[in-house]
Length: 319
Image: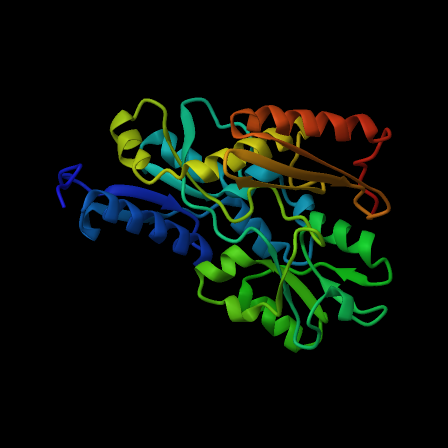
């Protein structure tokens, strides 16, 4: 294979959080860049950046994410490192990303999307329907808690955070009968067997952009833009154009229960979205079908339709 790029004089620095999943995503990005440009591993350096979100999440392990910060909680320091030139690209889970980037930064590289579905995890039940009445279910996701409350108001919901191993230990200790993870994360960690089942979107619509990895760079860094363009996945970009336009119009964050998923069939895109009251007492859902070229327009249009149906105070948090 002829190299598209010569081996650089210094490694391309890839910024990431230090969690096992974040590192797996950074390594996948590196491996794809190596393969696309026939470059050795020495051409890249993975730089771990500690974030405010990591500190707050560790200190307040029993508190909901909405109480410790918003969507930028796990990205601020990484983007600061990118702006200052400490790193050359940043690798993010797209479901954590605000819909607007800071001045001077652009997010224009996407890897092929993994399974976007939620995973049901339980030592004793095969699915949500099999949970006994009054069972305790753990989750830190406001979206998942609202969706579960809407479908099974008899269940008791408790705060539940930590890595896969921590959550499995809590389940073994009887803190909860079940919890949820993202199938994409389990697949990337080679832990798919942890899931008792993957939850169909018809039962639990996933978070916007769940399963997608994004690559952020400095706007003026055209050399890096050319490097990343070789691994940019267009179908993923088309799907996320609809989902993130939907989210942006709703002004979504970690504090609002919003779900959305776009699927492609040829040149047609099918977008489903829903907004929920935090206590699950009301769900407003809708869908759009149309040409891929109108993905962002469909996302914006669907969000406006749902907002028009939502009564005043729909997103108010009820403790």
